[in-house]
Length: 297
Image: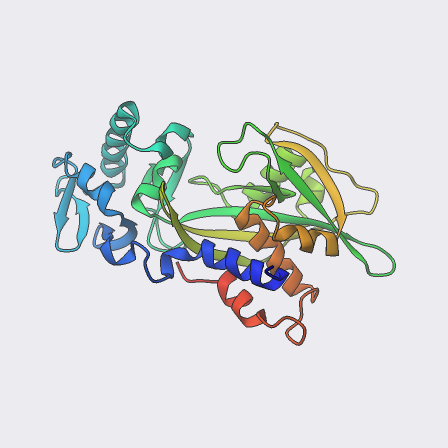
């Protein structure tokens, strides 16, 4: 039977499987906008995009836009029209979960967006997705750590019923990281903005995986929020069905169970490393854990 460490290593490998031998990386086409690579397009998606020669133009081992589509607005509108047609045809299962939420498409987070794209379609183009995750925790007078976890609603489009961080959400186009963090805390866990704003940014967790719905290069901005011992989050917008308050060792055990949403388990693993719950002298895969949490996109 696999140990906790081996199970965690397996989870990190799954969440970085786009980098592993045998992935589709070698057969993907680069998705380029204005001469910059912004994603990877799997072969099965590329063949369907070939039906839209007024929008997409293949060249070499890349796909880009036709020459007339040279502005932010024109690209965004043209892609949205293609995606709506593919949604009507039910060409891709990921489009069933249409969000009506626009994500910014750019080579790096620090770059100006080159277009917007419907969130549910981003995996078809392998474009980077950004999110915000909040570790809500307490420390008692003896220094013992406890953490608040959320259980996702059964109506969630992805990973329904799984354990999650106390608050988390995708970074929609035009929204700042801190604004998104405070908004998600308030909407999902009824945390007052004044308290949520005390959360400290502590870094990022990044990884790229692929599955039947496409390629997912993701970067999560992580915050730690130390809460008063008597504070209790409450269900807000219905995306969460329950909150649990557990000693950090129990949380650690749960990370490798099938109960946890995988990228949220990675966010908690990062917390365990930063707070020295996991140390290099006692964890044989310490270096592999750190590397697996911070793959370049």
